[in-house]
Image (tube, rainbow, N blue to C red; front, side, top):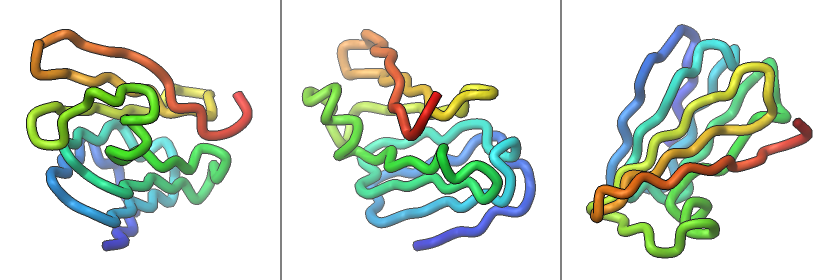
Length: 106
């Protein structure tokens, strides 16, 4: 599924999905996406293509291989004036993991 977004979206929730792309005209319109088990999830930004990012389960598991696709929730949000997406993982044990998925030059 490819969804073009032309307005501000505060929070988008995606669960147990595959091949989903959210294409924002303006990066400033993106605040966060929360997902559990979303495979091949992609964020695209028309005015900041250097921030385009694969942020699905496969990408999260590169840094957090213990991530469970049905019980762990992952939140991604844009860092202002940066070419990366901030990631917070809430794992089953309740221990938050934080990191950054670098998607271009910072």
